[in-house]
Image (cartoon, rainbow, N blue to C red; front, top):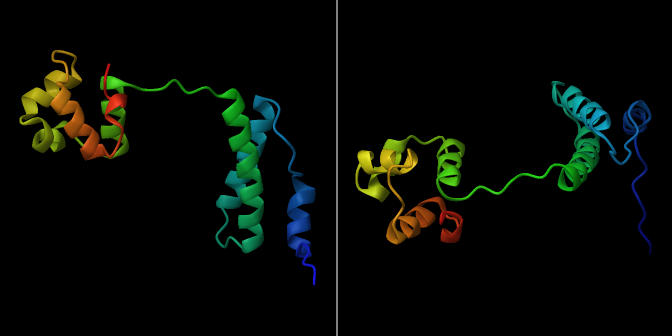
Length: 135
């Protein structure tokens, strides 16, 4: 017994015909694809066909961004600041790790360097490799 692809619904074919998925080759195509994604996400009831189509478009966006959008790696204090923001934390939330809010603020303001122990403790707190926090 062989299994093949599921026959696409008329709705899915309409999605593909309205905005045919193609490899993204420039910024204009990226923006158009992102707009198509947003228009589907703005709908009230997203169907399985919508989710399948979004997965295809999302893969195309991901592939383009992996090839064309180089994100500089964050290290040290810049990474620590990004981790705080990403985790929706405030400097005071690191007092349990770094002993006092003044130490936290001095580190974030570049007035004090992280010690090796602080680097290790922060790495455990944020569940990252400690080498990322080393300057």
